[in-house]
Length: 232
Length: 232
DNA sequence: ACGAAGGTTTGACATTTATCAATCGCAGCA
DNA sequence: TGCTGCGATTGATAAATGTCAAACCTTCGT
Image 1: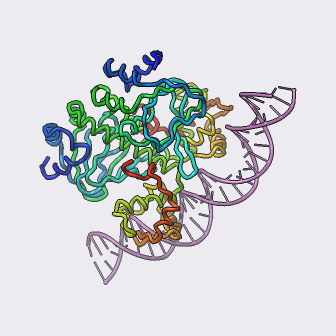
Image 2: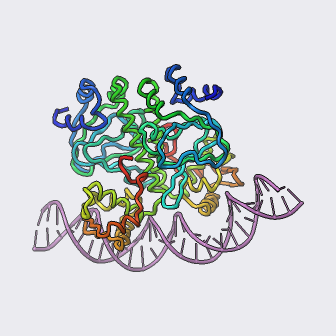
Image 3: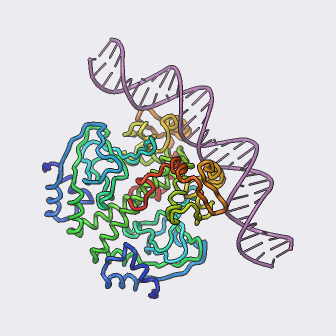
């Protein structure tokens, strides 16, 4: 794979502490591919042949059952996905599709496992990454089980506000249809939920959100570090 | 800590491949404690000072938010819990309480992290365990988001049937109140859900379940390995 | 500029799920 | 034995959420 993205990938927590030699070996075995929008990169149930790194664009992880579909995560640069399946050499639990034109580095799972065995720093980083992902997933479960859809939306808006810099005005960065699925509601319901948040100072104009009464929204949403914080 | 449970703990995937010396070192630093029922061992938000191993009894992991509470998992012997928090030295995301009189081995988190650095086999086992837990959590999310409460119950019954040996008759092993919370429904709703499953051959007598029309129930539940299987 | 496609919103309505209140039933205990 | 407490069930009702249909709006390509 070409050199251009290597420095960015190298900076990821997952790869930053491993030896140069092992990193080069991983990269040497990898492919950089460009995909058009709406391409299904992975189908759940497939074996996990590659660890994926999104270096450009965005990728949606979603799951299907019984003719239904739900959005589980949206991966933006620079991040990896399906690490757990790669390490266990187990089938992928989620499908993945590009949302826009995207570039993805594919690292053969075999090499990831080989270098995991050889490089202690890499192994340590993998444990951190897995533990983080695991904890993020637990938080998602708590969000789903303990909150109503309105509360989930309110807290999502606060999180998104933080991600976008913290100002009163920010962009959703996601189609509402997809956001609805992510929050486990229908598009119709999401539309109504936005209206229900108006009394708490949430103004919606297309994908632009303005929060006019920050403290009112926070009082309603009651965000918790044990559900909503990235780093904890 | 006394010797009696060591062989059983040693057999756990997490500890079976590490060196004798390191295992003894871990055990030497540990405590075996007996707790009465309904003791809150851990409160979410607390720092994770110990990796816990249930050797006898059972422990419920649950989470609270905004005066609500939900059951996330029930841990039975012999299993560990809160590994991810231990490794990241991060606050626990869930609370834990004994359901009955229980014995728990407490391994200081510091020692777990120290031996993780020293013992490659232990590190590998930890990665496996984390990846498994992570994947189990993703499956739980899929179960929650893609299924109605009736479908969740039907699939739970099939899983429980398998755990109990696969025969048409088996025990729930959990209070219905707790099962309801685990499945994200109210006790009233669970009670009605059992009735709704009667046409599919589900007979309920207290905590004894009899499945009289296995294939009908399976046709309704549509279990999927990517949501319901332990090992995948 | 125009039309088509698809996302979004709205309204009416159905279904699912929760809440509240009352009762039942069983286990533990005096 | 009978009391007590709590979990389980049932019925009535309310709230939350989903479904369907139509209208609206934006985007994109011809």
